Amino acid sequence: MNHANATPRARYARHLPLAVIACVAIAGAILLGDMVSFDTLRTHREALMAFRDGHLGVLTLAFVVVYFGIVAFSLPGGAVASVTGGFLFGLMLGTLLNLAGASLGAIAIFAAARMGLGRMLATRIEASDGTLKRIKDGLLEHEVSVLLLMRLIPIVPFFVANLLPALVGVRFFNYAWTTVLGIVPGTLVYAWVGVGLGEVFDRGEDPDLSLLWEPQIIAPILGLCVLAALPILVRKLRAKKVA
Image (tube, rainbow, N blue to C red; front, side, top):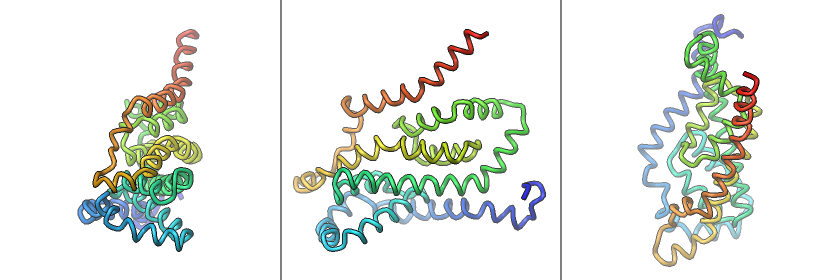
């Protein structure tokens, strides 16, 4: 159905998923701000580990569902959830579960945004001749590289990397696979922190997430950023030679 010919009810229905996400995100920020924390994890540590030992499959599924909800509704606690994955399930399984929950949540919010505001905004940008149109065309020209950079660069907020591509009309397939690949380094590092969380709790401390900026951690990620940006640089150099 063409957007211009859609009935008012159909137009409103397209915005409903994103509106629900926005409402839940606001409610979550207000109600869950202090609940999803390392203190909460410390308090329920023994109960969670006991439940894991007796019901690994159930806890695995529940963890992915909770992580999905945190990402899809932009709720607080993403870092805590990522560390918890390594704490409860170990490095490899924890990384895989973090990756599954985060990827599925990111894809869900992308689909919701694309269905509503994304479709409308992309159409309007495409019909314009201004700066936004040039930015969109430039992004789509280097789509894969830009998407990977948004995932790899640590200073880009996760919800921005989820919403912005939907609003400018990137291809769903490229968004999906670059999301999965691009968040691997981050999920691996967080799970690695979680593996040693028990010892940190035993000392009465909280995990030091500032180690994510240590040279031995950030240097390989920045190296991946350079590789992701390389195709953009090569195209620019070729364009200058042709000109």
